[in-house]
Amino acid sequence: MSWKAIITTGAILFCSASFAQEDIVTNGAFDLEVPTNGSGGGWTAVNNDGAGGWRLKDENGYFILNSNGSSQSDPTIEQTLVGLMIGSEYLIEGEYCNHYGLGYCDAAAFSFGVEVENSVILELQYSDGCPNFNPFAVSFIADATEQTIRFSAERNGSDCDYAIDNIQVTSLEMIFSDSFE
Image (cartoon, helix red, strand yellow):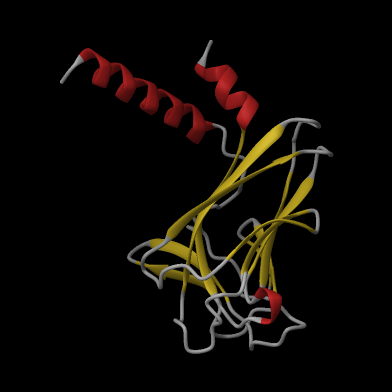
């Protein structure tokens, strides 16, 4: 292995270690149970039916956003982040996959969404079917010390349900300043 590869690998591992330490989401890996509808395990879920909700597979949790397909009731899950620094940039990352397939799903619709304080900051189309989770990432600038992040499925009149997992929110300023000190 060359010195360049060793230094690059070390820098990636160092940044990844800093990144993981700064996560401010509670239960982003869904290791703790979250109610299908209601609050618990760090999250509040709304408009999910019996086919949605928290699941545990091989000791790994995830959450399915699924409702009955009504365009007035997109299934959501949210969490209020605290201790944010106003004016700082934060990165929301996670993984998502279409849980029940294309039977009711319009693959062209922007059916998965990420919001901060009721403002949509990311909409995505159909992803691979589970268990193949696909990554997503989007950033936002905090304009308050507490802000709510929300994930939704079946957006824009679609009936595409999604499983989500490994949700993280990190301060980009903290990551970069820690990496260069």
